[in-house]
Image (cartoon, rainbow, N blue to C red; front, side, top):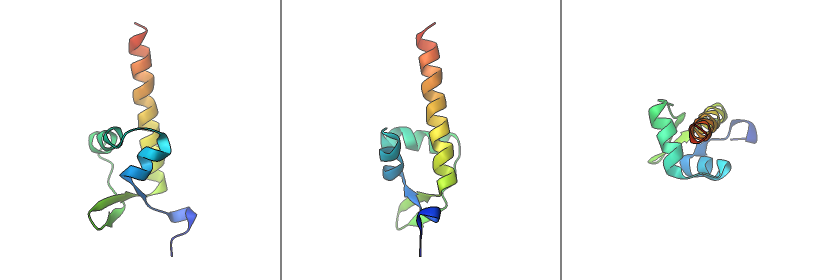
Length: 71
């Protein structure tokens, strides 16, 4: 039985959590080579630690864009 401590996240739920598009989440997963914890049918699912890493990478991209726009 899955609890909140070990839930698995789909790409759609990750995107919703961070208020961004699925495309941006998929981009981070693919370019940072983040491996899914498993699959639920055809959907890739990710652990909490993966979601944290994805969030860090999204924030890093945003910070770089912000920095570049001020140059």
